[in-house]
Structures are given as C-alpha cells and as structure tokens.
Image 1: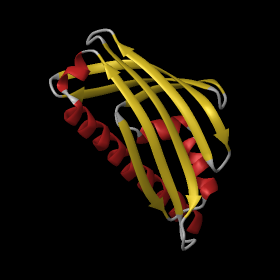
Image 2: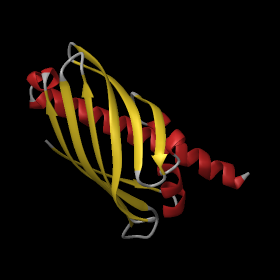
Image 3: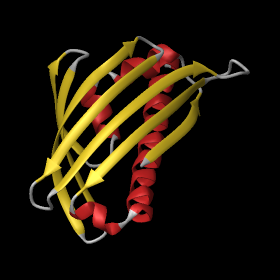
Image 4: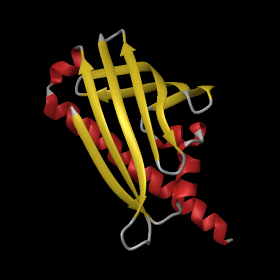
Amino acid sequence: MKFESQTTIQCEKEAIWSLLFDVSRVAELIPGCSDVEEIEVLKEYSALIKQKVGPFRFAMPCEISVDEYLENERVGITATGKDNKTATSVFVQMVLTLSDEDEGEGVVIDVDADIQITGKLATLGHPIVKRKCNDIFKEFDKNLHNELEMIDEAKEV
C-alpha cells in the first residue's frame, strides 16, 4: 500500500530535524508509539506500536533502521514488526524529505511510504487499513505542528 503525505510548517529546517531525531520527543507525537530505544545513533532503533484497527488490537514490537541520512534534507527508514497475537506482520519503507517552500516562508515535509501488512489485520481490507494509516499520519502531523509551535513560542520568550 502506497502512502504519500505533504505538509508545510512555518519553522526552520534545523528545528524540525532536531525534533525528528530526538527519539523520545518524537515518539510522543506518534499515535500508539512507546518504548522507543536508540540502539545505535542514526542507525538502529526499536519501538512498540499499539493500535486498534477494526476489531483487532495489537501491540507490535518494531525494529527500525535508518537506510539513508542527509542531515536537514532527507531520511529513509525501514521498519518491521510482528504481533504474534494477531499473526500480523508489517513492513514499512519510508522516505521523509524536507524542502524549502516556494515562497520561502516555511518548510515542506514530504512523506513517501510503502506499507505492507499481512495476517489478520490485512483481512480487514485495503480501505480500512489505508484509512487507519491516514488517521495516524494526520494525528502525527497535528502533533508535530503543535510541538514546533511550542518550540517557536519558547524562542520568543
């Protein structure tokens, strides 16, 4: 399942990048994400993702590896996880790119992800799973904007 998202934030690239790689802070912005651990800086992480999709609840331990890293510009990750209770496996390849907005007033965050889901969760069908993924990305986007606004307000004090 292909997923693309784009949002513009009125903030400096460095502030966004700094937040994205503060694993404990960014984990708080991702719905259902907890127990994030940095195994190797800018290389390998682990996390627990808990969600409810349709009738299924799952707690999925995930391994996350950074495949590509260009500071303040682009990061590519691969994440894999499996929930034994629902026999659901997830494989995600995602690229996040930061670029200056055309008018120079903000930063555009592009997310391009390929998400493959197997097991019981996949039996719900593409539309339901896609909608849940969209909801998660929208919530993350809202949380990211709020967090960056607080950072910006703190700078003004």
